[in-house]
Length: 93
Image (cartoon, rainbow, N blue to C red; front, side):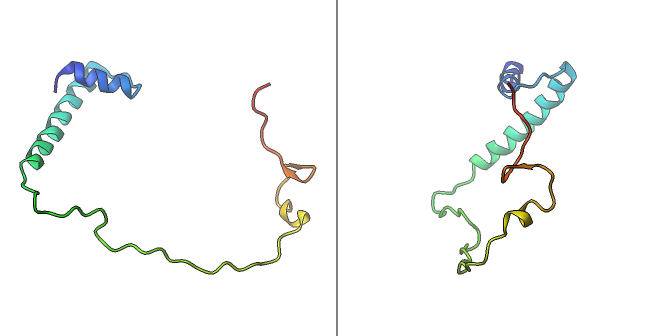
């Protein structure tokens, strides 16, 4: 991997790298790219894609209507409420 490619990736990720970090990462990236190039050589033309290795099924349950909490119980464990609403921190002016 060329040094300018690593710098481009670091810039896109908004990280600053020291020269020592660049050297270590350059070696790591070369090894990773080498593994991918080995994977590219494998013939997969007759292999069906496997998006999930196991069959996935949603487990659904019936909705059960229950009695709602009243306001007193809802705000029982907080001091951060006002006029029947939870009160959060102020954001800017």
